[in-house]
Length: 146
Image 1 (cartoon, one colour):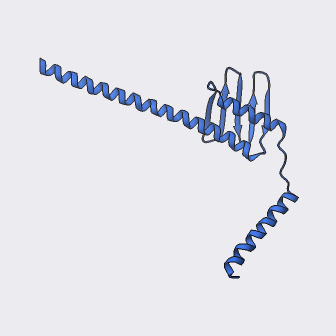
Image 2 (tube, rainbow, N blue to C red; image 1 turned 180 degrees about the vertical axis):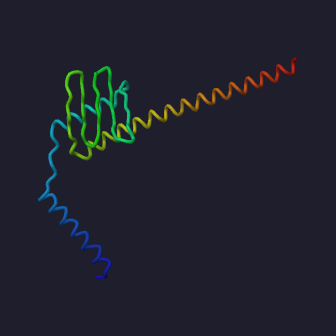
Image 3 (cartoon, rainbow, N blue to C red; image 1 turned 180 degrees about the horizontal axis):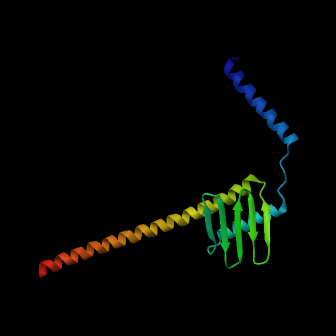
């Protein structure tokens, strides 16, 4: 047996023991039903076309607003504040996967809308430049005629 096998085998064994003991003494907490329901609400609102999504880069807040369903959601530091036309609810996301999936969904949707806006701006610029070129070409032809 050479040193490479011993060095690789012992850390792997220790890591397996660590994972076993970690699960025994610090079991993962079950996800509460309120968090699951809030997670599903957020996903559905994000997927709706009439929802307005906004991010605040300095405060790391994310906002979801849907006028048709009269819902407003603020997400900040694992706290989701869900406000409808009557009540306000605060739900703390303990599950990492659910929280980061919602964050990624919002961020990717905002990014997609930003790209659409950028394409529209580029299209308008091209259209305007073509108009300027056509006007210049028409004007130079008119100059030649007169």
